[in-house]
Image 1 (tube, rainbow, N blue to C red):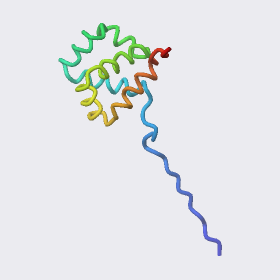
Image 2 (image 1 turned 90 degrees about the vertical axis):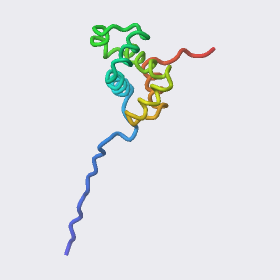
Image 3 (image 1 turned 180 degrees about the horizontal axis):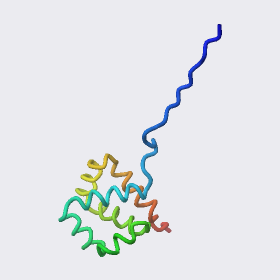
Length: 105
């Protein structure tokens, strides 16, 4: 008698490598915009205007500026990290992926 073997297919629900840089930036933006004071500070410090931000969400430089905003204010970086369930290093790495820092000489 031949026993039939069963194959079990496992589909991961999340990518073990984590979200890509664009996704991290969009998650961060969503978090920033939940607080009006923080959102206004983002606009003031980055020089972005709401209309430009809406139309330029696909541009790596704009996405990097959102992550720069967090990286340059440790309290916000840590709060976003906690709220988004991402390490601060993941957020900074996403920023560097979107706009790599200049090579050191």
